[in-house]
Amino acid sequence: NVKNGNKNNYIYYHPEMKTAMTRKVEIESILRNALKENGFKLVYQPQVDLTTGEVIGFEALLRLKDYQIGPDRFIPIAEETGLIIEIGRWVAQETISQIVFWRKKGFKEKTVAINFSSKQLRDKSYIKYLLQLLSDNNLDSRYLEIEITESILLENDKETIAFLNELKEEGFSIALDDFGTGYSSLNYLTYMPVDKIKLDKSINDRFVNSNNIKIMESLILLAHSLNLKITAEGIEEWDKFLILKKWGCDFIQGYVFSKPLSSEAIEGIYNQDLIKKNRGSALIP
Ligand code: C2E
Ligand code: MG
Ligand code: MG
Ligand code: MG
Image 1 (spheres, rainbow, N blue to C red):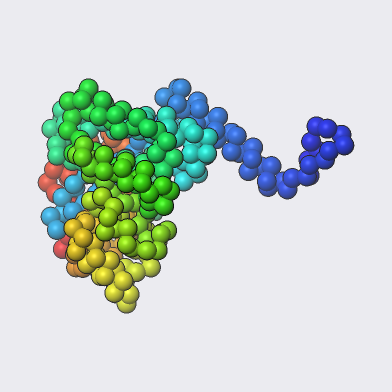
Image 2: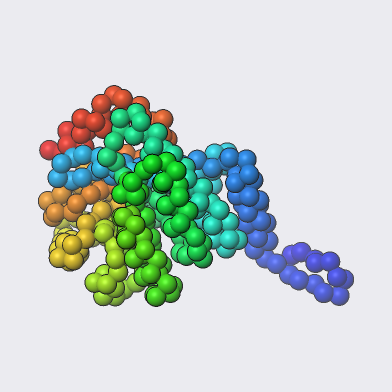
């Protein structure tokens, strides 16, 4: 237990609590530094079309260059401290430069998805910022996909729908991330302007096996009846890959195909013709 400043006023902490608080302050300062000192990087995880086997695009995932602290740990702190606004802009800017760079190398027609945190709804000029970046880089908005989480839909309905509609009108594609982990009503799917849903790993772990495919089958049917594409995320095993293909899931993203890779590694694979020549399809029996 720790004594705090004023002699008459003892504040007791559990040792673990103090450690957690110290850790949070540390991570906050790591994030501030990373913004100043170019300490972030993006890794890219391929997404595969289950019918053609083609790599259709990537999800950009944020990393700290010098620390083994993952985004599940630091994104919540970035959100709490408001740093997510500046970080979100960095992610968009870095992704767009990467797409432009890949396109110059002949690596065309792939989309890259970026994650958008609900706290970024406070970034009122975010869409303007995106459009400015695209026009500065002479890039069409259809190469950028915006991933929003299910929980964003609960935050502020009117504002969120307006935000999503504006994105759609500007030609961005929208994916609903972490589907199945939060909101239990499926009703919002009928009026939310999304193009794609991404089934969370936890859902796939529970429902994608030969004994328990009914739920998955229904979700895929539901998505398709609403004209939504469906991506299964976090697929690690071949049997799941095959079951999802059989039941008409559109895309997968998971270790079974590839972990998130550095931009250089993606280029390396591309140059070896592995992505160009549909490595995915070569893998699908
Ligand atoms: P997410 O958007 O749902 O991203 C998918 C996560 O699943 C990634 O974790 C990815 O590496 C992991 N994954 C993909 N396939 C597999 C698999 O087969 N097995 C396993 N075990 N994991 C797999 P990551 O990169 O650690 O990111 C975690 C979360 O952090 C993301 O979940 C997203 O919510 C958030 N995040 C990452 N980058 C950003 C960002 O730039 N902005 C915001 N706002 N959030 C981000
Ligand atoms: Mg995501
Ligand atoms: Mg997800
Ligand atoms: Mg997630």
